Length: 560
Image (cartoon, rainbow, N blue to C red; front, side, top):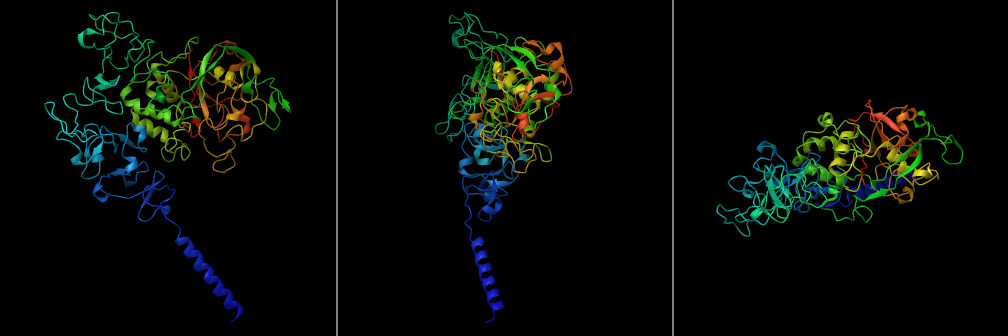
């Protein structure tokens, strides 16, 4: 046999061996992790990073599973792990935790559901055998609601779940026209309804508040100062006058239902006190090698950072972490129940007029939670794709693709506000230490911050995407705040002016630029930025408050 034939034979053997090796690659079964459809055993499809059975109706699915519309609009059989829930956040993106504690597709009518399914009274899709004659879902234990207190096995009896004065559903919701307060469903009133015997009367000074923070009414005739009253919307009784579960202004409610260990073993809502102090705001005399007027060699610093000027900041608190997807998810879940923008004049810096929420801003918020989710998921073709964090399946990522108005509304809902530009820089610069970067003067590196992907998707950055909050502890600031440099940009309250630092109003105690202009300010740079933007003095003012970006996020401040 000639050498050429030997070479050809060898090539054929190697080719057949490679083909066999590739075709014999182990495929993934139902429920296994995947990236592409080709990762799954045919005819399974990869949806939400798991292999699913494809379907046209629930009849195509295994017993007990339903055909659902996934977040990528594919129609697949629901996995057992995607079925049970307590909160909406327990469900895959696009599904809602229904009153039977199952993750279901949302609907406005039967036409939104699969053939053979119906749209229930709670606007979720279900099979006909999963509802009663009034299209109410059966309770999670299988009990069929009776008509005179009778019920099926362990049914709800004479006080059905979700009804007035009865227990809330497991996901803290109630039937239409009611809200969940202290685990009971009550009318959407403005004042607290008294308990039996008028026990909510009497002293009436227990700090009951409505959603706007105004004093709520209580009934008279009781003697225990409001101990037994069932409040209206936002009116849970508390000695510190905080608003109720459905209202704005409850500090840390974005972490409700979490374990408290999601962010580096502690609550993602951890807010750290910042002492009052005076510092030189802007670029000027930072200490670093090869610096010219505070600008490190090789960097281009802009004139809007100058002149350096003295600013005094009163004590406040600033959240340790950027707002996570998990925290923002709680806001999305509460959004429809709020049914209103932040109260006018809420969310103000206590010492700076003009920083409160204005009624003129209301029209810049989405009409409902569906629109809000569309905004932050970045519809195809927008700048938010493909890097937005809402649909990435990691609740510890920082939320991105939020407008300034959504950021401020979230912070007000969570009991805070956006920090002023001066407050933000005060923390990033370590106050009077006037640090060049939050960690000091050491040049940036991937051990200190997440940055460098200046031309996505080049792969030149530290991780070339947003990282879980708190992933760079070596780069924390003087008061232990994480990710002040890099990861995602952070909205601050101020309107942007390139010459504001030269104005008289930029110097003094508790200052902010409240004069309207075209754009608001962002600070801190992002995973997609260069080292220059990591400097504490760096300002970015090119974005209108309605703008949303794949690398723009939130950090909330709180009044003392």
